[in-house]
Amino acid sequence: MKRLLGGALLAGGTAVISGYTYARHIEPQRLVTEHVILPIAGLPAAFAGFTVVIMSDFHLHPLYTQLDLIQRAVATANQLQPDLIALPGDFIVSRLRVMDALAPVLGQLRARHGVYAVLGNHDARHGPRLIRDVLGDVGIPVLVNEGVLLTHRDAHLYVAGVDNCSRGYPDLAQALAASPPDAGLPGGTPVILLAHEPDFADQFAQDERVTLQLSGHTHGGQIRLPLWGPVVLPEYGRFYHSGLYRIRQMWLYTTRGIGTNGLPLRFLCPPEITHLTLMPA
Image (cartoon, rainbow, N blue to C red; front, side, top):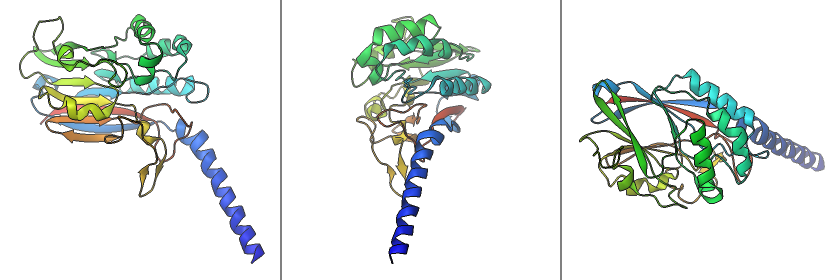
């Protein structure tokens, strides 16, 4: 009996050590590209096949996310040759100085219609103005209650971004006022909205102009258990924690993000680059 008990304890201890090693050192580096085709009502034919890459929650920090993972993510995104790249926030954990290393790497991102970002809750807490300025210097506009009208063959697509929903002052009406201000958003123009926290989707979907919301924030929960799902989810990320959702007329996609926070672990929830292809519904 003692021999059996000893064997069971040894096996259990080995399993725990192996599981921790995998969750700490292997899965956080196992970058996955998720390919999703989305039918968009009212999408102009000129934008059929329009591709969007989403990368979120970099959290550059010695404990949580190393720069080499982000460099691999940038290289992968560029290989996809997207039309648009969306960065829905949380570039840092708390240290603003990491932007000196992170911004030049993100500045290497390339997309035919540009790279756009919004602020995450960590960004809004620790240095929104600096992060906005540093990213702007490398060619990445940070949208704070504003948007950009994309035009292709006389057809339009609007990319909007709101201020951080939990720590800032999001104003969707202002974000949809079009660029330049007061120009008026052309009727029926599909709107892609960048908003860091996904659980504000119910509020944003009340505006019928919003076609697609892109979010991060949750990291997919980081640790997921079979038959259970995410063990812990953050505030404002408990309902729409990962993947594709339909809310009224609006699609929502929540990406699992690149980095980690809280615990530097991932289990059954690898880091994600999202590759969306938009097609007319």
